[in-house]
Every structure is written in structure tokens, then in C-alpha cells.
Length: 449
Ligand SMILES: [Cu+2]
Image (tube, rainbow, N blue to C red):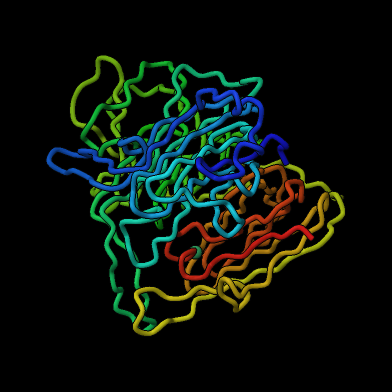
């Protein structure tokens, strides 16, 4: 835990007494986020009007330095209480932006100043943690998200360009799938990779021989995505912002909701290419961007990649240690859906219980714990643990080592196992990152006892 982490709410009676020295000096905050209306013309004539940060979609890129404390002031210019979550950062419960952990809301038309020490380094992001329930203008369905890059103290990167691209679905609408399970879902009319729909906005301009580092984020509220760059391979160097032990080449990247992938592309095939979703329906909605080599012209070309399954373990250590730190405990969590007749969405359960009537994962500081995730037949889930990173130790039946993440894919009817060290005392939310699953009960908490 970072002892410098704290948070103040403007106007709170006791605020003065708890202020850290550098704030008492009324220093200017390092970053400022304004929650309010945001508009973007993502394609000619297609204008998205939603709630965002500083009026842009995505919100501003926040670049911080590992270990250098920052203050962020947040203004909420909306009529709804809001929460800003620092995804993948080991911050305090007060700063984390999760109501369940006790983080205070940024109340309507109020200001909040939050302070934390950015850590660990890498490709992180920030987003609202407000509930949406059946209001698809709120929560992750809105435009409240942005990249947060924490520069490492030593940057080992060797690349000619660094390009941040968030995948995002827009214009959400509740859709009845019409099956007997009463399973409602969310569909979208448009999508972007970066700031515009495929074929609109500026292309990624490259030169032959360049090494381009792409930092991808799946900022979709509910949808997993697969990405390919026609004519090229991705050299995956980091997952969820953390360098992988065994960087490797792949044709297709998979990002479940909230995941990040950093990949270097050797620009060795001149032309005008599509970097986009392998799913044609997603590409047609706009999920893609043109990559244009210098002095090349013409229609961007899409080539369907080989159908290669995504497997985290190919980026892991080649040898799994026979002996790890002994475990202080193991938690087995299984996920199932319960129809809720007459309601728009189904209820989700962790070990047959739904939030807030769930069993917490009780841990002691310093212990190493394993969590076994098991998805039922209804759906796969992106599991996210707040305020900690974990090591992926088993994907299905395959033992693995060395992959540090904060979101993990637990496939339908499948399992995944992770281990984490309880090194950041305080309540830590553990939940499915699909907005409609989280809203309808798919949450539990790691509690230090
Ligand atoms: Cu889920």
C-alpha cells in the first residue's frame, strides 16, 4: 500500500486536517478531469453524444511516472454521482473509485481531489465505475474512459512510433435474444478503433522498416474483440501493461473486456492495410483503422488472418516452477446465471450467491492465494481484481507461469487459475468486467482480516 495515497473532498469539514503537505500548499493538480457532455463525429454524419471526460472520446491520455505521486482533480458536471476507477493501479481503497470498497462518490456538480502514487508501470486506463443497470447511457456504456500510461523508471522500449488505440462499441441498445432463458443483452450500432470508424479520420502513417508499438485497450462495455493487421504479424510484448516473459508473434490478438495488449509490428510489407476486428460485423460497424505506408495509395486492403486460437500461455515462461511460494489459501469461484422473469437482464451469481449476499475472500496480509475461476455454460467472463495484480498459473488444464495481469479470460464452460499476493490491505473488488454482469450481481470482494 502506498502511504501517500489519500483523498479529499472539497468542502468536507475535516479536509484541511488530513491534507498532505504538497496539497496544503494549494499546488496545482497534475491532472484535471471534467465529467460532462462529450461529442464526437466518429464517421461522416455520425455523431456520438454521451458523457465523457473533458469533452473528448476517449478522454485525455494521462501520462504519469512510476512512483511519482500525482493529484487529479475531478469535476462532476452531471446530475449523477460518479466514480473514477484507476484500472490496474495499486492504489488505496479511497482513491480506487469503487463504491463497494468505500471510495466516496464524486457528487453531482462537485469537485474531488484524488492523490496516489502511480504503480506499477505500463499500459493502464481509467474509467467510470458507476452502475448502469438498464440505463445504457450510464456506466461503461458512456464515453467515460481513457488511457493512463505509467512510464517505467527504466524504459526498455525500442520502437519508432508508439500508438494507443482503444476498441470501443457505441450506440448501445438493449436487445432481447428471444430465447426461453429470458436472456437480454446489449447490441451496438457502431464501433471505433482509436477515435473514428474504419475509413474515417486519419490513418496510422508508417514507413517501411519502422517498428511500431501498438498499445491496445478493449474499452467496450460488454464485448470481447479479436484484432488483426492485414499483411502483418503482431509481436506481443506485454499483457495488461506488464511485460511478458516470452514475447511471441501472432496473427490475431484477443482482448476480452478491459484487457490491454502491447504489440510491436515490423512494418515490412508496404501498402494500405486494414487493422481491425476479425469479426466482419464489428468491422462493418467501424471497428478498425487504416495503416498507410509512406507513398502508398489506394483502397485499404483486408485479408482474413489464419484461424489461430488465442492462448495466453504462448507468452509465458517455458518452464513452470515445480515449487512456488506455499499458498495461504485457495478460493474456488463458479459463475452462473439465474433468469429474472420480467426484468431486462438476468441475475449473475458467484458460488450460487448474488451481490451483496456473497461470501468474501478472506485473506491475511502477506499471504499468497490462489483463485480458481470456473465459468458455467451460459457465458465466458473477463474477471478483474482491483488494487492487485495476479499471476496466471493455469489456463484450462495447462499450468503456466510468469504472466502478470489484472483481467483474465475465463471461457464459457472453462476454468482459469490465478495467484496473487495480499500486499495492498483494504477491500478489493473482484468482478466480471462486462457491465451488465457486474450490475446484476457478479461481484465479490477480497477482504483483509
Ligand atoms: Cu460476466
